[in-house]
Picture 1 (cartoon, helix red, strand yellow):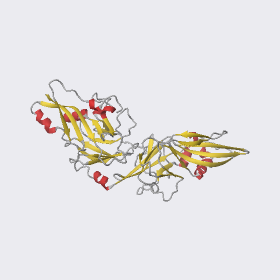
Picture 2 (cartoon, rainbow, N blue to C red):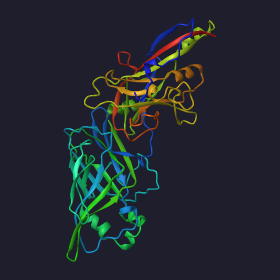
Picture 3 (cartoon, rainbow, N blue to C red):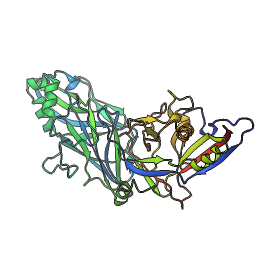
Picture 4 (cartoon, rainbow, N blue to C red):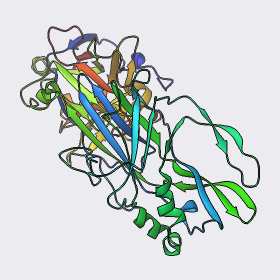
Length: 457
């Protein structure tokens, strides 16, 4: 936990003359798998590029669209003399969050020129189709890539490259983990060194001419299970060239920065997942599925929470106070090898306008009963193979009618934020979890552990 507080020490105290009782509730929980909401994927700090074949969930494919800018994003004047391109590399820096097979799978990544302009003033959603067929997620039969690379995913291994210094010897330097995709020199000659002065005189005109890039893994050449690779947004197209002016020959480098990105995400689900998505109104399910990026979440409700017990107490002028309530989510055994469960999940509710809001136990800003991110929970405990949520205040308000359940959900979130409770759908996590629902025959079923006190009214 990223807090000095401990989940196990959280709860309301028991007053003098009162007796606390324990209850494990598994019968009044309803849980179903539902699709995640669409979200804007423009301008993320890290972006998934995926070809991941999951035997339980199906295939996830994502593509990364980017702009491409002039050096310095301003006017560019090519060097004088005769220019020869030695090489051009699209540099994609790894970011935290790789999910899949980094041992046996071989990846082939292709780079294409977009068919239409990538607009930096537009908010693109995860279901955006960047100029390719809607029936076939990546139909490039009529277009050859401008760059391609086959590689093993090594998101934590730094590499060495030559640093080109004008007028001085080249030096070998260590750089952060990255891949460097060879780009066809003809693309550079056409769009940079051979472009008109009008095009090179305005970054806006240049971007309109180039349109942008599309980066995706080749599903026909990526082997094994594959995976989802996270790349940062601080990338660039680096061009190494020689310029000959009279008797002077020099090597130099120019960088075309990427300033804006957006990710298109597609899931092709197995029959088992499609069955779950088609049964969201037929009662609670034995299993539920959580998946990134922008894949699946779970809707959970407590329609008869302590209803009969409280009714009998009220008849005797007594009531109930919940001292502590904890929801325990357990991944289904056998589903997390070799692919680990999501490191962190979140739980949230909808308000009257059906907008996401924090549960009372997560909302430190407006509810004094909240213990904050460390106490609220949602982290995967690999030793116990469980996730825990403290939901005491939420269930107390639900029981007393102080809050209305317009929808309560459990979903994937990125685990890099440790200071607040995230509740938004995110494209920045690629892992998945198969969790046990309300299967009465499973010892791992969804549990609600409640400590309560009977009090006189």
